[in-house]
Length: 289
Image (cartoon, rainbow, N blue to C red; front, top):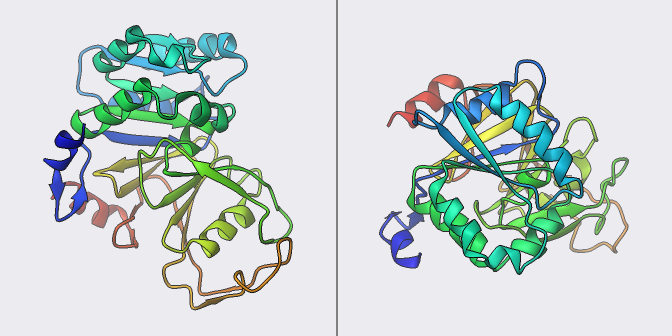
C-alpha cells in the first residue's frame, strides 16, 4: 500500500483516487432518496456494485431490509451486505475479495466505536484504505459511518447547553481523511458546543458538522462539496487568537476568540487545505482544474 500511495504524492500531499461521501444520518430512504441517488450517480458503471457494512449497527437485519429496498430504487445497482461482528470475521479473505470488486463501500449508522474497535488494524480495513487511495471508488458512510471516517473520531459527549472542557470523547477513526473531525445529526441534536470544544483544543483540525439528510463529497482528499437538503457547518480554528482552554479545569466553561464558522448548502464547498469557503462557481472551477 505504501508504494502505491507514495507514487501519488503531489507537493507532499497524498491525493487519493477515490471519493469520500460522509452523510449526517437520517437520509431520505422513502421519497426523493436524494443523497443515496447522489452516491450511486458518482460511479461510472452500467451496474453499480455496492457493499454495505453493518458493523456499527446492533440491528443489521433491519438495516439490510431498509437499505436493500432504498438502493434498489436508485437505479442499476447490485447490493450486498457484510454483517461483520468480530475482528476474526474482518480477517476473512471472502470479505476482502468482495471489497476489491465493488464500486461503493457504504457504512451504516449505529455506534462508531464498533467500527473502530472491530475493524481497526484488520486486513479488511487495510483493503478499504488501499482501495480508496489507489482506485476510482466511493467510500461512503452515514451517521456513525461518517464520524468514523476521519483520523480523529468523536464518539460521545453532548454538552448541548455549555461549552465545557473535557465534555467530549475522541479516539482514532479509520483515517480516511486527515486533519478533520466529523460530527453527524449536527443541527437536530444541537451539537455545536461539542465540535467547537474539540476545534478549540485542536485548532489544526477542521470541524465538520453534518445535518440530517445532508452530506459532503470529499474529492482529492481536501475539496468538500455539500450535497442534500440540509446544512453543513464548518468550524475553522486556524485563526483563533485566544482561548482559555489550557488554563481552566475539566468541566469549566471555555472562552474562545475568532473561531471562524461557515455554513454550506447543496452545491457549496470548502477547501480543507487552504481553509477557504467556496461558492458554486469557485468550487466548479477547482473541480475542473
